[in-house]
Length: 315
Length: 294
Image (cartoon, rainbow over all chains, first blue to last red; front, side):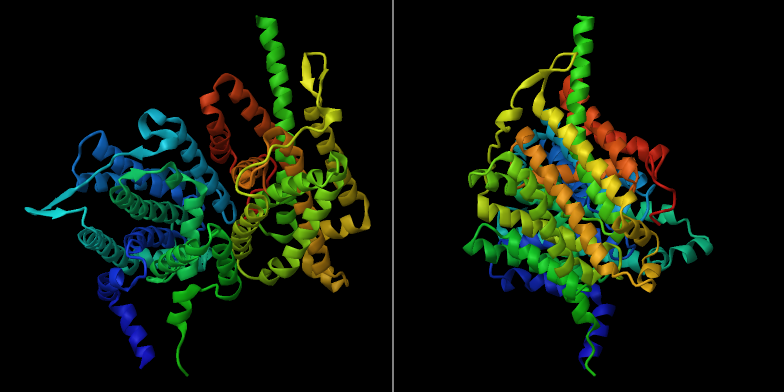
């Protein structure tokens, strides 16, 4: 019965995701967390594309997310581009920076990848920090206020939390549908082939490096879109969006939920943010329990929470 | 003006060598651990910070810098061995990413524990009195402490080299890095050797933190920024190569120091540009063997 349910969940994952997004804001103890789960969940989904499905551990995803956020913010703030144009630019900017980092980082292999992506992301952070004339430097990019959203002739009130939530949820759902399509495509199969057996993929005529760069670029597009949504949501792009902590956060979210599973990153984002909020109620030292939970996850549940549940089959 | 700026240049290069010495120590410890255990220690920066804080603790309890110089590597070395025994060793044989992720989680825990014990604000860290002066090194006056950092680094590297090349344990370590299975067959307890190597690496990281403390002060996050720099050094030098760690560490130190002089606004970006160039021309690094990391 339960096994059949899980099979069904895997088949109708877009439907299940939509249902989940529908009830999320009413199920959480912290209402404001729901939007963050959406945005960070999408970011973690983008990260999962390269780590979970391709086996490349990136510690530089903050650059993809942050550049997307800055691109959206700058487009709205300086160029007066409407919100959908801003989001599109965020998505593109994430893909472009991912192409640059991906082309450099895929020149190395294995364990180097994590180190190189981390270092290149730090480089992006320092550039944004120094270019304070454009990015606002240390203070972040401020004043990206979007009050009204025009959609096919209907004007939506973006200030209202629920309207905002469902609008962002709709965009995230579209992105998830796109991701689901990518994973089901031949390219998705090739990615998993490269992860499972690189030598064999090579022998079968797969250009492994091209697959890696392309997957990284796709990941950058999802991450950049998530960054753009965050810029709209927060009305500010803090410089911390680009720092090491953001890269680390998305790694933790993906791993906690379950790398290589479709829903895992979302579950991970949910667990991470709820844990963070709960600990913050009693202490400012939330990194300690989060770090301990993460270590326990690596040691005892390497498949992550959702990965463990999805594999569980009653005897 | 020309002569003056040449002296200034030489002094700045010397400053860079002192900074590079800290990088060399960090990258050496990281390379040592990786070469033997194939573990990328993401908590290396946290051990760096831990070393600086243990040093601050020794000073606060009335000890002097020389006592700290002894206590810090002992403390961070024992902490490292405990980490290897309690956490890392359970992941041998799993994917290469797993110990990396574990030590990454550990770095959060260690840094937060430092914050809980010593506060979130940084602490000042005075240069020891005996070293708090400048000496004439022919091209101008140079802070004695920075010379001391270079000298200590050289001494540690020499000791490490003698240990690895001239002792029985060093022989076992080198052999174990090549083929741990044969070592086990020959009756060597590789688990103990690996624990020792991990502790040695973290001890050197802690010592680097102590040496860096008078140069930059002490803060819980001091390890985070330098971790990225240490990765640059490791990538440029070639992972697992001690010679690479030394050469790349000094080169990176000098580049940081020179860009601070000529183009301060580009100071933080220069070394990443160096890494990008190295990746394009020689992806395995100065001393790395191609295909080692596949």
